[in-house]
Image (tube, rainbow, N blue to C red):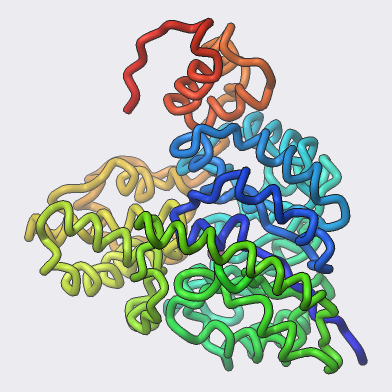
Length: 457
Ligand code: CO
Protein backbone atom coordinates (compact mmCIF):
# COMPACT_ATOMS: atom_id res chain seq x y z
CA UNK A 1 0.00 0.00 0.00
CA UNK A 2 1.32 3.41 -0.94
CA UNK A 3 1.59 5.63 2.09
CA UNK A 4 3.32 8.94 1.52
CA UNK A 5 6.05 9.72 4.05
CA UNK A 6 5.22 13.11 5.51
CA UNK A 7 7.91 15.59 6.45
CA UNK A 8 7.91 18.43 8.95
CA UNK A 9 10.59 21.03 8.24
CA UNK A 10 12.20 22.29 11.45
CA UNK A 11 14.87 24.76 10.26
CA UNK A 12 12.96 27.82 11.43
CA UNK A 13 12.52 26.51 15.00
CA UNK A 14 14.59 23.55 16.17
CA UNK A 15 17.18 23.80 13.38
CA UNK A 16 18.44 27.23 14.35
CA UNK A 17 17.67 26.68 18.03
CA UNK A 18 20.00 23.67 18.01
CA UNK A 19 22.80 25.14 15.88
CA UNK A 20 22.90 28.91 16.42
CA UNK A 21 21.23 29.37 19.80
CA UNK A 22 17.92 30.46 18.20
CA UNK A 23 19.39 33.61 16.68
CA UNK A 24 17.79 33.49 13.21
CA UNK A 25 16.03 36.81 12.58
CA UNK A 26 12.59 37.19 11.05
CA UNK A 27 14.05 39.21 8.18
CA UNK A 28 16.30 36.25 7.36
CA UNK A 29 13.27 33.96 7.15
CA UNK A 30 10.84 36.09 5.18
CA UNK A 31 12.46 36.07 1.70
CA UNK A 32 12.42 32.26 1.47
CA UNK A 33 9.03 31.48 2.98
CA UNK A 34 7.03 31.44 -0.24
CA UNK A 35 9.39 28.89 -1.73
CA UNK A 36 9.22 26.78 1.42
CA UNK A 37 5.45 26.99 1.29
CA UNK A 38 5.49 25.28 -2.10
CA UNK A 39 7.75 22.33 -1.24
CA UNK A 40 4.88 20.15 -0.08
CA UNK A 41 5.86 19.75 3.57
CA UNK A 42 3.33 18.28 5.95
CA UNK A 43 4.13 21.21 8.26
CA UNK A 44 6.76 23.81 9.06
CA UNK A 45 7.81 24.14 12.68
CA UNK A 46 8.42 27.86 13.03
CA UNK A 47 7.51 28.97 16.54
CA UNK A 48 7.62 28.07 20.21
CA UNK A 49 10.42 26.30 22.06
CA UNK A 50 13.15 28.85 22.68
CA UNK A 51 12.22 31.14 19.77
CA UNK A 52 9.84 33.26 21.83
CA UNK A 53 12.37 33.98 24.56
CA UNK A 54 15.16 34.57 22.01
CA UNK A 55 13.09 37.09 20.01
CA UNK A 56 12.50 39.26 23.06
CA UNK A 57 15.80 38.68 24.85
CA UNK A 58 18.36 38.82 22.06
CA UNK A 59 16.78 40.02 18.84
CA UNK A 60 14.58 42.90 19.99
CA UNK A 61 11.74 41.33 18.03
CA UNK A 62 8.11 40.81 18.91
CA UNK A 63 7.59 37.05 18.62
CA UNK A 64 3.88 37.52 17.84
CA UNK A 65 4.77 39.84 15.00
CA UNK A 66 7.17 37.18 13.67
CA UNK A 67 4.38 34.63 13.65
CA UNK A 68 1.98 36.97 11.82
CA UNK A 69 4.63 37.79 9.22
CA UNK A 70 5.41 34.12 8.64
CA UNK A 71 1.70 33.32 8.35
CA UNK A 72 1.23 36.07 5.77
CA UNK A 73 3.77 34.34 3.49
CA UNK A 74 2.92 30.71 4.21
CA UNK A 75 -0.54 30.12 2.80
CA UNK A 76 -0.60 26.38 2.03
CA UNK A 77 1.56 24.70 4.65
CA UNK A 78 0.54 24.09 8.23
CA UNK A 79 2.49 26.07 10.81
CA UNK A 80 3.58 24.19 13.89
CA UNK A 81 4.82 25.29 17.30
CA UNK A 82 6.38 23.51 20.26
CA UNK A 83 4.72 24.14 23.62
CA UNK A 84 6.08 23.00 26.98
CA UNK A 85 2.64 22.20 28.39
CA UNK A 86 1.98 24.07 31.62
CA UNK A 87 5.40 25.76 31.22
CA UNK A 88 4.13 27.32 27.95
CA UNK A 89 7.37 28.72 26.47
CA UNK A 90 8.99 29.46 29.80
CA UNK A 91 10.71 27.45 32.49
CA UNK A 92 8.12 27.15 35.25
CA UNK A 93 4.45 26.40 35.69
CA UNK A 94 1.96 29.09 34.76
CA UNK A 95 -1.67 29.37 35.87
CA UNK A 96 -4.35 27.83 33.66
CA UNK A 97 -5.75 31.14 32.43
CA UNK A 98 -2.34 32.15 31.04
CA UNK A 99 -1.92 28.76 29.33
CA UNK A 100 -5.39 28.99 27.79
CA UNK A 101 -5.06 32.56 26.60
CA UNK A 102 -1.59 31.88 25.22
CA UNK A 103 -2.87 28.97 23.16
CA UNK A 104 -5.90 30.87 21.83
CA UNK A 105 -3.67 33.74 20.79
CA UNK A 106 -1.13 31.40 19.17
CA UNK A 107 -3.86 29.90 17.02
CA UNK A 108 -5.41 33.29 16.30
CA UNK A 109 -2.04 34.57 15.09
CA UNK A 110 -1.52 31.66 12.71
CA UNK A 111 -0.55 28.37 14.37
CA UNK A 112 -2.23 25.20 13.03
CA UNK A 113 -0.50 22.42 14.97
CA UNK A 114 0.57 22.59 18.60
CA UNK A 115 3.06 19.97 19.77
CA UNK A 116 2.66 19.72 23.53
CA UNK A 117 5.04 17.98 25.88
CA UNK A 118 5.85 17.81 29.56
CA UNK A 119 9.42 17.34 30.72
CA UNK A 120 8.35 14.63 33.17
CA UNK A 121 5.69 13.08 30.92
CA UNK A 122 3.28 13.92 33.73
CA UNK A 123 0.00 13.78 31.84
CA UNK A 124 -1.67 16.14 34.30
CA UNK A 125 0.63 18.89 33.09
CA UNK A 126 -0.79 18.52 29.57
CA UNK A 127 -4.49 18.69 30.48
CA UNK A 128 -5.06 22.41 30.19
CA UNK A 129 -3.00 22.76 27.01
CA UNK A 130 -4.81 19.90 25.29
CA UNK A 131 -8.24 21.26 26.17
CA UNK A 132 -7.34 24.78 25.05
CA UNK A 133 -5.79 23.56 21.79
CA UNK A 134 -8.90 21.56 20.94
CA UNK A 135 -11.15 24.45 21.88
CA UNK A 136 -9.12 26.79 19.68
CA UNK A 137 -9.65 24.40 16.78
CA UNK A 138 -5.99 23.55 16.25
CA UNK A 139 -4.41 20.12 15.75
CA UNK A 140 -3.29 18.82 19.13
CA UNK A 141 -0.13 16.75 18.95
CA UNK A 142 1.03 15.22 22.22
CA UNK A 143 4.71 14.47 22.49
CA UNK A 144 6.41 11.95 24.73
CA UNK A 145 9.79 13.08 26.00
CA UNK A 146 11.87 10.02 25.20
CA UNK A 147 14.48 8.90 27.67
CA UNK A 148 15.98 5.66 28.89
CA UNK A 149 16.03 4.13 32.37
CA UNK A 150 14.90 0.95 34.00
CA UNK A 151 11.40 2.32 34.34
CA UNK A 152 11.15 3.77 30.81
CA UNK A 153 10.07 0.49 29.25
CA UNK A 154 8.00 -0.08 26.14
CA UNK A 155 4.89 -0.52 28.26
CA UNK A 156 5.60 2.78 30.02
CA UNK A 157 5.49 4.55 26.66
CA UNK A 158 2.43 2.64 25.49
CA UNK A 159 0.58 3.72 28.61
CA UNK A 160 1.46 7.35 27.89
CA UNK A 161 0.23 7.03 24.31
CA UNK A 162 -3.09 5.59 25.52
CA UNK A 163 -3.51 8.33 28.09
CA UNK A 164 -2.78 10.99 25.48
CA UNK A 165 -5.26 9.49 23.06
CA UNK A 166 -7.90 9.37 25.80
CA UNK A 167 -7.28 13.03 26.53
CA UNK A 168 -7.91 14.01 22.92
CA UNK A 169 -4.55 13.96 21.12
CA UNK A 170 -4.90 14.19 17.33
CA UNK A 171 -1.44 12.72 16.79
CA UNK A 172 1.50 11.45 18.83
CA UNK A 173 5.14 12.46 18.65
CA UNK A 174 8.11 10.52 19.95
CA UNK A 175 10.35 13.38 20.94
CA UNK A 176 13.93 12.17 21.19
CA UNK A 177 15.68 15.40 22.11
CA UNK A 178 18.99 13.69 22.84
CA UNK A 179 19.10 11.46 19.77
CA UNK A 180 19.41 8.30 21.85
CA UNK A 181 16.58 6.16 20.49
CA UNK A 182 18.48 3.49 18.58
CA UNK A 183 17.19 2.12 15.24
CA UNK A 184 15.90 -1.27 16.36
CA UNK A 185 14.33 0.13 19.50
CA UNK A 186 12.65 2.80 17.41
CA UNK A 187 11.31 0.08 15.13
CA UNK A 188 9.95 -1.94 18.03
CA UNK A 189 8.46 1.05 19.81
CA UNK A 190 6.70 2.40 16.75
CA UNK A 191 5.41 -1.04 15.76
CA UNK A 192 4.01 -1.44 19.26
CA UNK A 193 2.39 2.01 19.26
CA UNK A 194 0.88 1.35 15.85
CA UNK A 195 -0.79 -1.75 17.30
CA UNK A 196 -2.63 0.19 20.00
CA UNK A 197 -3.66 3.35 18.16
CA UNK A 198 -4.66 4.65 14.73
CA UNK A 199 -3.39 8.14 15.50
CA UNK A 200 -0.63 9.41 13.18
CA UNK A 201 2.83 8.99 14.70
CA UNK A 202 5.60 11.53 14.21
CA UNK A 203 9.23 10.94 15.11
CA UNK A 204 11.45 13.82 16.18
CA UNK A 205 15.13 13.28 16.83
CA UNK A 206 18.54 14.94 16.75
CA UNK A 207 21.75 13.89 14.97
CA UNK A 208 23.92 14.47 18.04
CA UNK A 209 25.00 10.88 18.63
CA UNK A 210 25.20 9.86 14.98
CA UNK A 211 22.33 7.37 14.81
CA UNK A 212 19.41 9.64 13.89
CA UNK A 213 19.13 8.77 10.20
CA UNK A 214 19.33 5.05 10.91
CA UNK A 215 16.59 5.40 13.50
CA UNK A 216 14.39 7.29 11.05
CA UNK A 217 14.88 4.58 8.47
CA UNK A 218 13.80 1.84 10.85
CA UNK A 219 10.93 4.00 12.09
CA UNK A 220 9.77 4.42 8.49
CA UNK A 221 9.90 0.64 8.06
CA UNK A 222 7.75 0.35 11.17
CA UNK A 223 5.20 2.64 9.54
CA UNK A 224 5.90 6.02 11.14
CA UNK A 225 3.74 8.66 9.47
CA UNK A 226 5.83 11.82 9.78
CA UNK A 227 9.52 12.59 10.32
CA UNK A 228 11.10 15.88 11.39
CA UNK A 229 13.99 17.08 9.24
CA UNK A 230 15.78 20.37 8.60
CA UNK A 231 16.96 21.81 5.29
CA UNK A 232 20.60 20.72 4.93
CA UNK A 233 22.43 23.92 6.00
CA UNK A 234 20.53 23.85 9.30
CA UNK A 235 20.67 20.08 9.76
CA UNK A 236 22.96 17.51 11.41
CA UNK A 237 25.13 18.03 14.47
CA UNK A 238 22.79 18.78 17.35
CA UNK A 239 19.98 19.53 14.86
CA UNK A 240 17.67 17.19 12.89
CA UNK A 241 18.70 14.99 9.96
CA UNK A 242 18.75 16.84 6.62
CA UNK A 243 15.56 16.90 4.54
CA UNK A 244 16.94 16.35 1.04
CA UNK A 245 18.56 12.91 1.51
CA UNK A 246 15.27 11.51 2.82
CA UNK A 247 13.43 12.87 -0.17
CA UNK A 248 15.95 11.21 -2.48
CA UNK A 249 16.16 7.96 -0.54
CA UNK A 250 12.44 7.32 -0.73
CA UNK A 251 11.86 8.67 -4.22
CA UNK A 252 9.92 6.15 -6.28
CA UNK A 253 9.23 3.89 -3.30
CA UNK A 254 5.89 3.36 -1.61
CA UNK A 255 6.98 5.94 0.99
CA UNK A 256 7.83 8.67 -1.54
CA UNK A 257 7.66 12.08 0.18
CA UNK A 258 6.63 13.84 -3.05
CA UNK A 259 8.55 16.92 -1.92
CA UNK A 260 9.86 19.26 -4.62
CA UNK A 261 13.60 18.63 -4.80
CA UNK A 262 14.34 21.60 -7.06
CA UNK A 263 12.80 23.96 -4.55
CA UNK A 264 14.65 22.25 -1.72
CA UNK A 265 17.91 22.90 -3.54
CA UNK A 266 17.06 26.58 -3.95
CA UNK A 267 16.11 26.80 -0.28
CA UNK A 268 19.39 25.18 0.76
CA UNK A 269 21.31 27.66 -1.41
CA UNK A 270 19.45 30.50 0.29
CA UNK A 271 20.41 29.32 3.78
CA UNK A 272 24.07 28.51 3.03
CA UNK A 273 25.43 32.09 3.21
CA UNK A 274 23.30 32.77 6.29
CA UNK A 275 24.86 29.80 8.02
CA UNK A 276 28.32 30.89 6.88
CA UNK A 277 27.75 34.32 8.42
CA UNK A 278 26.90 32.72 11.76
CA UNK A 279 29.98 30.51 11.58
CA UNK A 280 32.16 33.54 10.92
CA UNK A 281 30.75 35.63 13.76
CA UNK A 282 31.06 32.68 16.16
CA UNK A 283 27.33 32.21 16.78
CA UNK A 284 27.62 28.73 15.33
CA UNK A 285 30.14 26.96 17.51
CA UNK A 286 31.61 24.22 15.32
CA UNK A 287 31.45 21.87 18.28
CA UNK A 288 27.69 21.48 17.77
CA UNK A 289 28.34 20.00 14.34
CA UNK A 290 30.51 17.22 15.69
CA UNK A 291 29.16 13.72 16.12
CA UNK A 292 29.13 13.04 19.84
CA UNK A 293 28.61 9.34 20.66
CA UNK A 294 29.06 10.29 24.33
CA UNK A 295 25.39 11.22 24.29
CA UNK A 296 24.65 7.51 23.88
CA UNK A 297 26.77 6.70 26.90
CA UNK A 298 25.63 9.50 29.19
CA UNK A 299 22.17 9.95 27.61
CA UNK A 300 22.70 13.69 27.70
CA UNK A 301 21.32 15.96 24.95
CA UNK A 302 23.88 17.74 22.78
CA UNK A 303 22.73 21.21 23.82
CA UNK A 304 23.42 20.27 27.40
CA UNK A 305 26.96 19.15 26.60
CA UNK A 306 27.88 22.45 24.99
CA UNK A 307 26.18 24.41 27.79
CA UNK A 308 28.10 22.50 30.43
CA UNK A 309 31.37 23.05 28.66
CA UNK A 310 30.87 26.80 28.43
CA UNK A 311 29.73 27.04 32.06
CA UNK A 312 32.77 25.08 33.22
CA UNK A 313 35.02 27.25 31.08
CA UNK A 314 33.66 30.40 32.73
CA UNK A 315 34.50 28.85 36.12
CA UNK A 316 37.96 27.83 34.95
CA UNK A 317 36.99 24.23 35.60
CA UNK A 318 37.10 22.75 32.13
CA UNK A 319 39.14 19.84 33.50
CA UNK A 320 36.05 18.73 35.44
CA UNK A 321 34.05 18.07 32.26
CA UNK A 322 34.30 14.28 32.33
CA UNK A 323 33.56 14.20 36.03
CA UNK A 324 30.41 16.27 35.60
CA UNK A 325 29.35 14.10 32.68
CA UNK A 326 29.64 11.02 34.85
CA UNK A 327 27.74 12.78 37.64
CA UNK A 328 24.69 13.52 35.48
CA UNK A 329 23.36 9.93 35.22
CA UNK A 330 23.91 9.54 38.95
CA UNK A 331 21.89 12.66 39.80
CA UNK A 332 19.25 11.60 37.31
CA UNK A 333 18.86 8.23 38.95
CA UNK A 334 18.66 9.76 42.44
CA UNK A 335 16.01 12.21 41.27
CA UNK A 336 13.78 9.52 39.75
CA UNK A 337 15.01 9.51 36.13
CA UNK A 338 13.61 12.78 34.78
CA UNK A 339 14.01 13.09 31.00
CA UNK A 340 16.71 15.64 30.16
CA UNK A 341 14.63 18.24 28.37
CA UNK A 342 13.89 21.89 29.23
CA UNK A 343 13.69 22.79 32.06
CA UNK A 344 14.86 19.53 33.70
CA UNK A 345 18.01 19.34 31.55
CA UNK A 346 19.23 22.68 32.88
CA UNK A 347 18.27 21.79 36.45
CA UNK A 348 19.95 18.37 36.49
CA UNK A 349 23.00 19.86 34.72
CA UNK A 350 23.38 22.60 37.30
CA UNK A 351 22.96 20.22 40.24
CA UNK A 352 25.54 17.85 38.78
CA UNK A 353 27.98 20.69 38.26
CA UNK A 354 27.50 21.93 41.82
CA UNK A 355 28.00 18.42 43.17
CA UNK A 356 31.34 18.14 41.40
CA UNK A 357 32.62 21.68 41.90
CA UNK A 358 31.85 21.85 45.63
CA UNK A 359 33.22 18.33 46.13
CA UNK A 360 30.29 17.72 48.47
CA UNK A 361 27.21 16.24 46.84
CA UNK A 362 23.98 18.22 47.40
CA UNK A 363 25.72 20.74 49.58
CA UNK A 364 24.48 23.45 47.25
CA UNK A 365 21.01 22.98 45.81
CA UNK A 366 19.27 25.31 43.35
CA UNK A 367 15.75 26.42 44.28
CA UNK A 368 14.38 24.72 41.15
CA UNK A 369 15.67 21.33 42.30
CA UNK A 370 14.07 21.84 45.71
CA UNK A 371 10.78 22.68 44.00
CA UNK A 372 11.11 19.62 41.80
CA UNK A 373 11.62 17.36 44.80
CA UNK A 374 8.60 18.99 46.47
CA UNK A 375 6.50 18.03 43.45
CA UNK A 376 6.05 21.50 41.97
CA UNK A 377 7.04 20.31 38.49
CA UNK A 378 4.84 17.23 38.65
CA UNK A 379 5.42 13.62 39.56
CA UNK A 380 8.93 12.28 39.07
CA UNK A 381 8.94 9.24 36.74
CA UNK A 382 10.36 7.00 39.50
CA UNK A 383 10.39 7.79 43.23
CA UNK A 384 13.19 10.10 44.34
CA UNK A 385 15.76 8.32 46.54
CA UNK A 386 14.73 8.80 50.19
CA UNK A 387 18.16 9.81 51.51
CA UNK A 388 18.61 12.34 48.71
CA UNK A 389 15.13 13.73 49.26
CA UNK A 390 15.98 14.23 52.91
CA UNK A 391 19.19 16.01 51.98
CA UNK A 392 17.35 18.33 49.61
CA UNK A 393 14.14 19.24 51.46
CA UNK A 394 14.49 17.73 54.94
CA UNK A 395 11.03 17.06 56.32
CA UNK A 396 9.22 19.52 54.07
CA UNK A 397 5.97 18.40 52.53
CA UNK A 398 5.68 17.02 49.01
CA UNK A 399 2.60 17.98 47.03
CA UNK A 400 0.68 15.31 45.17
CA UNK A 401 -1.86 17.32 43.19
CA UNK A 402 -1.41 18.81 39.71
CA UNK A 403 1.04 21.67 40.37
CA UNK A 404 -1.03 24.27 38.48
CA UNK A 405 -3.97 23.59 40.82
CA UNK A 406 -2.07 25.65 43.36
CA UNK A 407 -1.78 28.64 41.04
CA UNK A 408 -4.40 31.36 40.86
CA UNK A 409 -5.45 32.96 37.59
CA UNK A 410 -3.06 35.80 36.90
CA UNK A 411 -3.87 37.47 33.59
CA UNK A 412 -5.57 40.49 35.18
CA UNK A 413 -2.72 40.93 37.62
CA UNK A 414 -0.18 41.01 34.77
CA UNK A 415 -2.39 43.36 32.82
CA UNK A 416 -2.48 45.78 35.71
CA UNK A 417 1.27 45.60 36.18
CA UNK A 418 1.97 46.93 32.70
CA UNK A 419 -0.99 49.25 32.39
CA UNK A 420 -0.17 51.90 29.80
CA UNK A 421 2.65 49.86 28.26
CA UNK A 422 0.74 47.11 26.51
CA UNK A 423 -1.09 47.50 23.25
CA UNK A 424 -2.54 44.04 22.94
CA UNK A 425 -3.31 40.91 24.90
CA UNK A 426 -0.27 39.41 23.20
CA UNK A 427 1.91 42.01 24.95
CA UNK A 428 0.42 40.99 28.29
CA UNK A 429 1.11 37.31 27.58
CA UNK A 430 4.73 38.06 26.64
CA UNK A 431 5.00 39.92 29.90
CA UNK A 432 3.44 37.03 31.85
CA UNK A 433 6.15 34.70 30.52
CA UNK A 434 9.18 37.00 30.63
CA UNK A 435 8.37 40.05 32.77
CA UNK A 436 11.66 41.94 32.80
CA UNK A 437 12.70 41.45 29.21
CA UNK A 438 9.19 42.14 27.91
CA UNK A 439 8.93 45.33 29.92
CA UNK A 440 12.19 46.53 28.47
CA UNK A 441 11.06 45.51 24.99
CA UNK A 442 7.76 47.39 25.29
CA UNK A 443 9.50 50.51 26.53
CA UNK A 444 12.16 50.37 23.83
CA UNK A 445 9.42 50.04 21.26
CA UNK A 446 8.41 53.61 21.99
CA UNK A 447 11.41 55.31 23.53
CA UNK A 448 10.01 58.79 22.94
CA UNK A 449 7.01 58.03 25.14
CA UNK A 450 8.59 56.20 28.03
CA UNK A 451 11.71 57.69 29.58
CA UNK A 452 11.97 55.20 32.40
CA UNK A 453 15.17 53.87 33.83
CA UNK A 454 14.98 50.13 34.14
CA UNK A 455 17.15 47.62 35.86
CA UNK A 456 17.25 44.48 33.84
CA UNK A 457 18.35 41.23 35.32
CO1 CO B 1 14.22 18.93 19.22
